[in-house]
Image 1 (tube, one colour):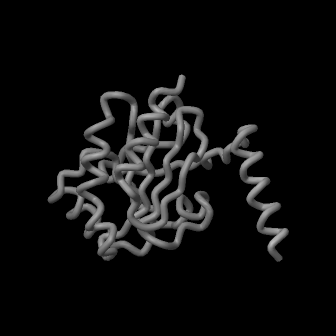
Image 2 (cartoon, rainbow, N blue to C red):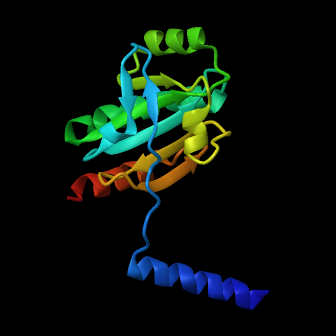
Image 3 (tube, one colour):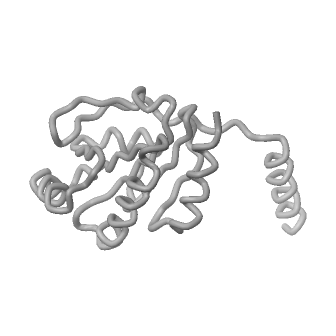
Length: 161
């Protein structure tokens, strides 16, 4: 048993040194609250923060001001954000939340669950994906991220060409 753990740790170290191929973000189409059609193909050349959330999720509501602050801090440098409301979230609740909190980024309602499914069957909220300029998933956060670490990672990704 111990030798498997050592081998697994060694493989992680080798992968880190040699650079692993990252998983591509899925190709998804979605509609924003304002009726605008959008697609993950529009994300090319941007660092993207994709946040799956629900109005009934206490942690989602708690972290949203920090998601907003993160978006505001980095948007001028190439970060974009989309908040994807889960299929079980009533659209009227999502629209009211986005309006009263003045969310400064796109908000999509995943009413069929296809966007969550495409991102690997997202079921827990909040779940947030950080995607680099090449459309690769760099990090998946389940639960509230460590925002200081997230900001550091965003800085690195924005500096990449």
